[in-house]
Image 1 (cartoon, rainbow, N blue to C red):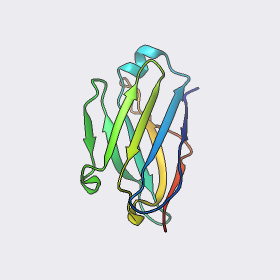
Image 2: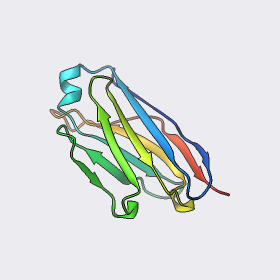
Image 3: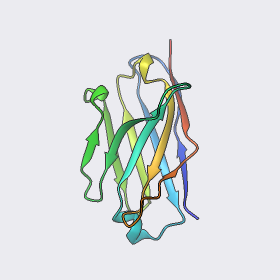
Image 4: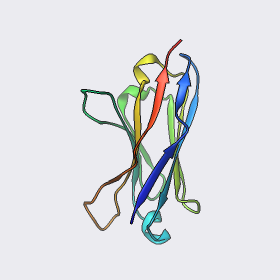
Length: 120
């Protein structure tokens, strides 16, 4: 059974930084290495929105709102992806989710999310 667990969220002041991490289990390493992974975020009453997707070659597609503040990376040996966020703004407050979609399937797997709150 595929499971995703996010960590690293918390309360941070505007202009601060956080690093989120997502660990994937329940899939063989070759599938993980060949599959894209992504970060999304959501606020109550709003649709979940893309933060960034990293493909199997390490190329990342970012959302426009990030303005170069965020960086997504993956460690295939550890089956993890990270989201480094700098210069955080109050509008970045959200529940951040990790997504995994095996390359051979349309099935999406999600973690439970980790809360990021940007406030003074």
